Length: 185
Image (cartoon, rainbow, N blue to C red; front, top):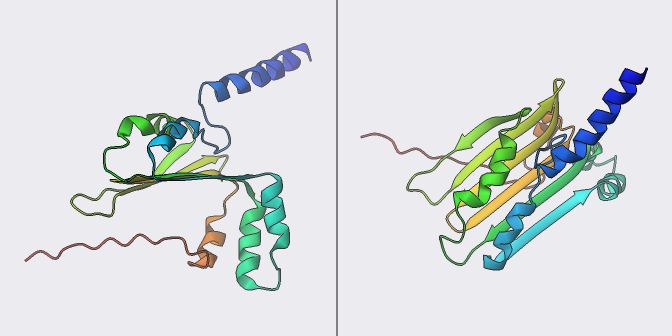
């Protein structure tokens, strides 16, 4: 019994240390390092929705409307939605070094890169999609969108059912990624 108490105490003590060291927990990324970009940005978006707000959003959605019911089912499994987005008047206001802390977290065990889109010579920009999982369950998603004058990081935390997301098919107006390839002559 004493060994169990000591082991539980050690795990509990290690949790805050992991959080301070920047390690992610349950699909949640620390995005506060990006705040240093705000003074340079022409437009800044910072969204933090968690706990009560997610439950409240789910409670006001109708169970009679099919789209709202689908959104409600997705929201029920979420713990948080965190978005940091910066748009700049000129290029060169941020660098890869500004994303280094976010990328380091995405290299941690449990995170997997699902998609990576790089565009060369196009104005589309780059996009990356990551998934955090544990025990066969999705615990979080992370999306990074990098353009010449824009940077957006989206972190969705909680149980995300991909099949339920597919049901929405654009009902939430999420942007679709269209990649056009030039035909070879």
